Structure formats: C-alpha cells, structure tokens
Image (cartoon, rainbow, N blue to C red; front, side):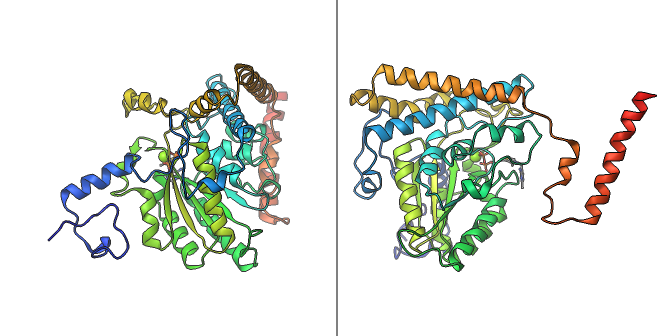
Length: 401
Ligand SMILES: Cc1ncc(C[n+]2csc(CCOP(=O)(O)OP(=O)(O)O)c2C)c(N)n1
Ligand SMILES: [Mg+2]
C-alpha cells in the first residue's frame, strides 16, 4: 500500500487523513513541518529584501507604492521602539510586567493595516502593534501593564477590543461578534464588515479556539482567525502541540487555511486583505497562520535561556521583519539614509513620550474598581464598595491616632 501523504493531503487524494494511520516517518515529517516554514509559506519579500511575485496575492498590494512601504517601515520601527521602551520601564519598576512583541511587528502591522474602520479586532495580550494600527494611543496600553487599568481605550471607536489574558477566550468572543455581523446583514459586498481575532500557537490547543472554529464555520461568520505562530507558548515549542502545520487544521472545520511569512509585512498585508475580503463577501471564516518568531522572552517574568538555544534566535535575526523592508527600500533607491535617520529620531521621541507619560501616570482612585462593572447600579456591588472604602478609611484614622 503506498504511504499516504499525511501533512499535505489534497482533496480527493486517497482516504481522508483523519482515518489514516500515519507511519512514524509521516509523524516526524508532520512535526517538522509545524516548525519549518516550508514551501507553502506565502512570501512577497524575502529576508534579503527581494520582491517575490505572487500571481494570487500581488493584486492585494497593488496600491502599496514606495511611499506606502516607507509608511509600513515607519510603523514597525515605531512599535518596536515603543516595545523596547516599555520593556526597559518594567525593568525600572515603572511597569508591573511587559509582554514584548519583538519580532512580530510585520504580522501585527501587516494584518492591522489591512483592516477597515468598521472591522473589529479581538487581540490577546501581545498585540501592541495592532493597537497602534487601529489608532489606539500606545499610552493607553500602559495602564494595563502598570496594573492600574483593565483597558484604556474606547473599543468601539477603535474597533479594537480590550486585551484578553485567558488563552484563547477572545476567539469565542470574536466568533460571537462575527456571527452578529452576519445576522445583522453587514456581510455580502465590498462594504461588508469583518472581524479578526489574534491568538498564539499555544492557544490552538485550547478548547475555546476549537469551539470558535466550529461556531464560525457553521454560521459562515466573517471571521479571520489570525494565529501568530511565534514558535513558542512560553517554554512549550509548537511541535509539541501539533502533529501538522497549524494552518492545515482549517480543513477539518471546512474553511480555508493559509500559512504566511509572518516576518513579511507585505505578505501579511496582502494575505490579510484577501482573507478579510473573503469574509466581507460572506465566504468566511479563514484561518491565517503567520509564521514568525518571538525574539524576546514570553514576558518580563520569563527567562527563555532556560529552554531554548541562542542559535535559534540568531537564525531568526536573519529574517528580521524590519531589516528586509529597509533592504528593499535602500536597494531600490526608495529611501535614503536621511529617511532612516528621521524615522529613528521620530521613534526616539515617540518612546520618550511614553516614558514621560508612564512616570507621571496618575494612580486611579481605589473605588474605581467598582465602576463600569454593570451598566446600571447594583446593590451588592454598592455594599462592597462602601465596605471597601470604610476599610481604607480605617488605615487613615489608625495613622492619625
Ligand atoms: C486559560 C489559560 N491557561 C494558561 C494561561 C497561562 N499562559 C499565559 S500565556 C501562555 C502561553 C500562550 O502561548 P501562545 O498561545 O503561543 O501565545 P504567545 O504568548 O506565544 O503569544 C500560557 C499557557 C492563561 N493565561 N490562560
Ligand atoms: Mg506562541
């Protein structure tokens, strides 16, 4: 019996993969494919900054001229600079924790810039670049990490939901929201609405993500599942979470899945626009696996040297999302040194502004934890508020005596 292709079965090609017993070689090949980009990686800009033509996706970035590409470059430099500043501020005790996005700038800016004003994005906790692309002031993210705020922006105005720390949970919220867009007739033409939800490779092992896939699929919800496969779920590598590349899971739910080079901002923009377009026209959902790398620690509480080798990081540095755009712009004469210097100076000012804000961030009044819990008054909560305030008053009077 010929051995069945396990990792990339084509429809109609032999028995369904689910019914097959994979050989050990197929299992190994599948595991390897989860952590190696492979031929199926959609890429428009190589790590060396060379443009790769794509018959399927070029039309989605036709409008991205040199000026627009300089804009994407600037976006990525600014969010990286902000990320490094926030990381440093955690080390200085100004933030309780920080979740670095280093290395994931292209995935976040590419997909974030693909969204239209009426679209909705559901982030997890690392999507600072998407927040920026949605027009959220990055200062408004910092209260969460200073542990004084649960959120800090108007999510309706920005089309950017509050952060979700519970792994995978936002996928259910997003599926429900996208089903609402469908029920309200906001899907069906070029002006249709779509939702995008961000989650990590590790989140794909959560039940919530599975349920979100099922609900979105059976209701044809206009939902783009944007999985940033950054290779690690804290200390757990992707190949320990899946026997086959994550994007291929979509087949089991009956919607398309695609793997894009998550370090290629142009490809992320093109593939996200395509997927959102499918959703707007009622052909959703779609799964995108953005193949990328978490270049820093999981959070500032983590030490990645305990579980991964530095040569892995060195290898990914060569695929840096910002450097390839810089190389493309410089080589093609689309940007000169003065431009790069200007962006760097702008990024430094941007970071200094965040620092100034954080150092002077006002402490919220303690009773604020009780506000905005319910839309209307609630007697139980009111009683708790009173009790808490008189408890705090007790400290003041004790000190006075
Ligand atoms: C339901 C739940 N279980 C466990 C955790 C602890 N936790 C926080 S982040 C994380 C790993 C997530 O990895 P991944 O989905 O790959 O996202 P990444 O952090 O790499 O962006 C875990 C297990 C959590 N926050 N929520
Ligand atoms: Mg991960």
